[in-house]
Amino acid sequence: MPESPKEAAPFQAYRGTEPPRFVNGAERECARILDWYGVPWEYEPRSFVLERDPEGRVTSAFTPDFYLPEQDLYIEVTVMKQSLVTRKNRKLREVRRLYPDVRVKLFYRRDIERLAQRYRLRIAS
Image 1 (cartoon, rainbow, N blue to C red):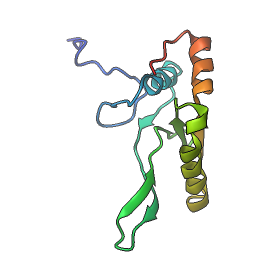
Image 2 (cartoon, rainbow, N blue to C red):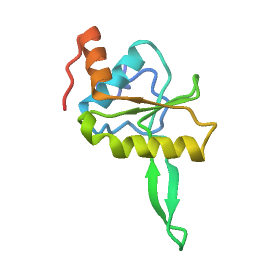
Image 3 (tube, helix red, strand yellow):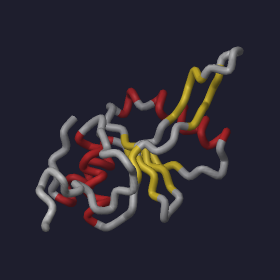
Image 4 (cartoon, helix red, strand yellow):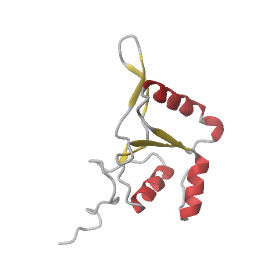
């Protein structure tokens, strides 16, 4: 018996256990591109602790949007204006310093817009 549309998986290459809950349209479109090309991906599978307070509580962390297990690569998508990306860049530098074996690629608004134009996608801000 075929699956009903509600039961069918919306993404074929998604490797997570729960349906992804995207923060913005750019993340959704990136997921669609990954899916279109059959690239296995996970959505926000891990957070990297960047700082703790004296009691050991996490005060700063970085959670990349996607993980591509076959490439062992994390992808962060930001649609913020370039002038507002400073904090995210700082966190990314800290991840690279604290976790030197972790590979993370940051895609900026302009990168997403180029992909959207190339693949004729609509990007929601």
